[in-house]
Length: 186
Image (cartoon, rainbow, N blue to C red):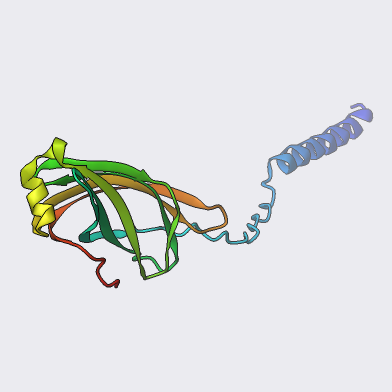
């Protein structure tokens, strides 16, 4: 036998062992990497969620009476159900009395309403009796009760880091007595 053969065999066995160790070592699972812990985020306060103001028609007031025209004011109570102040503005409206259109208009001035409080809003209506008829003249002149409908929309501003606003539609109906003098406020 050749002497080199045992030496060659031993070398081959060792090389095979190293190769097997290398292959097995590369297949061995690595330890799991530590799980990333999310950094706490600074809380950003949410914008306040606003409820619509509650609109009530308190009265219709006869402000000025001329030959064929009458200037009326619709006195509205606007209640803020929110724990923060809101601003009621840009009011567009149509007012109907006894089923007929009496007048319309737009009031474009801010009206602040305190948190949990009320504000009075006055909407002017110019009524021309040549267009509406004698029966309406009699109701208003005699300070009678009139059936009404008030419809329209307004913008409601909400405080916050970025002042936001939302549209509010309204449609109210009922009956109210025409008054000659302004009623006492809330």
